[in-house]
Image (cartoon, rainbow, N blue to C red; front, side, top):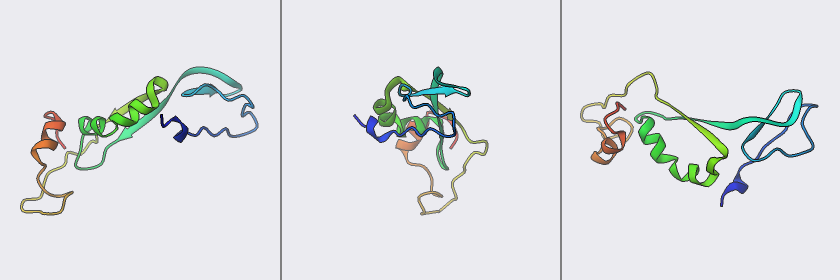
Length: 106
């Protein structure tokens, strides 16, 4: 189901020979002990926002399941289209993109 795409790498002399369960994080000095899920920080580019990013990663979230906690953040600088621009990253957003944005700025 795509989980074979995920790779966990142990580092340092305290890395455990035992593999922790998927999505778990060993605590320093206590290899193999789990306290929380691994986190994925999802940052969008411009022009986009949290709602668009959530739409874009929906399939990935389904593949990795409940093993990860997703953190979505909006960028601090709103994006504005350049009047008359034809380049994709500068032009006015389409009605579909505006619908996905759900009223949030790009």
